[in-house]
Length: 260
Image 1 (cartoon, helix red, strand yellow):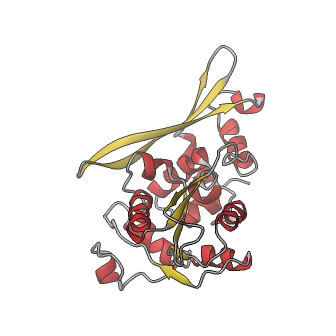
Image 2 (tube, helix red, strand yellow):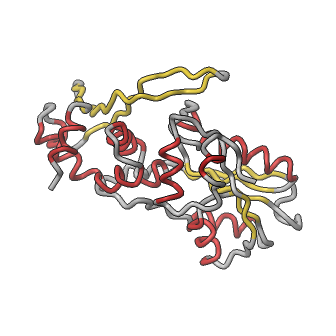
């Protein structure tokens, strides 16, 4: 049963666009502050989903929206995308190598959104790998929104604009806090390299996944930074609710200083 306040928040942000042979369900607008060459420019973001189910195609009714939300977590919207890996230097045989398991973030990686720190982490980790001389960046395309998919993430953003944190928004939409799976990426890593690796991450779950698969990884490098008024709550939630590691004390971290 969908909570009335959740339904009310999302109902006003969902529209259906009917075409000759199909219907697109449009969700938005969502406020998206974007960094353009050092200047923060605020955009409005939408995402849409092609509806093939006749029940989901029907008008902008409350019942249709409730049906959409109730089915959202079983629609596997994060599927149908492909992951990749960027390898640098003598990754197979170097004594030490850095790796980053980076979850796709359409808004942060592509648009430069400041609602999160994903774009910063992507660019920074690539620079770290190149400077180190050996490493690999795994870009995990089915991990959008911690595994819920882009359209679902748009709906989660709407809830976040109403005061819900990242974890709460995912849970209210019927998802787990974090449903990402690293098994495929780890199998590729093991194919490319058998020697130890150092993982660039703040997330202990990534370390645990590597160790569970038998990968030798005893070292970790934290990656905090790009703190702003737009993502402060998001970053705090990573530490207080998702268990991310080694943020420096609040006064320093949330003034935008990178952890040592």
